[in-house]
Amino acid sequence: MTVTTDVVRVAAAAYPVDRLPDWEAYADKLSRWVAEAAGQGAQLLVFPEYAALELIGLLPPALHHDILGMRPALQALLPDFLALHTRLAREHGVALVAGSVPVAREEGYVNRAYVFGPDGTLGHQDKRRMTRFEAEEWAISPGEGAQVFAVGGLRFGVAICYDSEFPDFSRRLAEGGAELLVVPSFTGTPAGYTRVRVGSMARALENQCYALHAPLLADASWTYAVETAVGKAALYAPADRGLPDSGILAESDWGVPGWLVRDLDLALTRRVRREGDVLNWRDRDAIADPDAPADLKSFPAGERPLPA
Image 1 (spheres, helix red, strand yellow):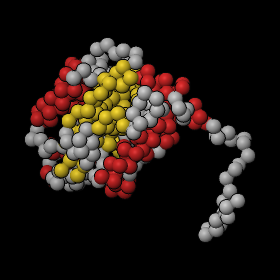
Image 2 (cartoon, rainbow, N blue to C red):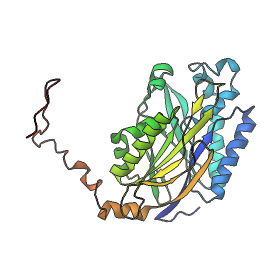
Image 3 (tube, one colour):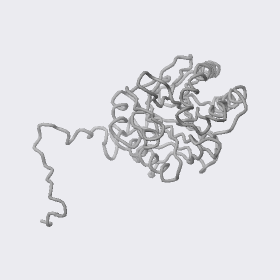
Image 4 (cartoon, rainbow, N blue to C red):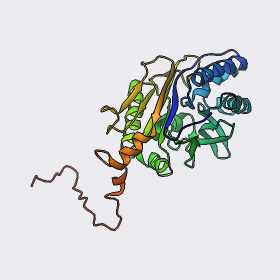
């Protein structure tokens, strides 16, 4: 599939967790989802954080609520999971960001989003910052590295859920050439969704790039791992010339499964970086000179300076 330099069609999944009876049912479901987005001309397809945990339903029932025991059991399904995504990416000529999954390493488990190119090539991005649930209950460890991927004329990075709520990692991706931040999320409450939404919009603003938000949807009392997940898919941009005043290019309906498919016009964000009403990208280091005199004053607890 040919991708033009300036316009790329992307798709974010508001993906629902189903209790599936066997591997064939999972493969059929994923195949239908990929075919649907590819049929709409999408060139980059993004699934949510922990969407792969739908595979918990294929494990013995005793593991469905055993969040530590399910981790090693899921590793046995990983080769087939990778082979399925590789096949679908090649078959449809698309790039896929797969639903993330706990992956075993020598020092423990990381939350990993695998990325597949249209030719089936494989890469990954590990989540860098863990939520309290991941760290305190699930024993998922922070990953390493920052990867920038390319599909045609588009370079993108993956900021998994909580990672989007901090500026440093996304800035590193943007400075590595990313013009789109992909944000797969799993949030159990509207407040959690809002945190990721606001973080994604802030990252789009300060890096003057696009951010594509793909949320997990779940009402799955049969597994403690992803029993509730809420949200809506969205595409964000810097609020500047030629782009929406709200910073929101598109949103799906709350809690409704499906694809959000939209075109990214990279010429718009490139122009905003050059000649926008504000130049966040240019000015990102304006007060970061380590040799400049410190202008931050601190005061003892309970004391505040009087106005001048």
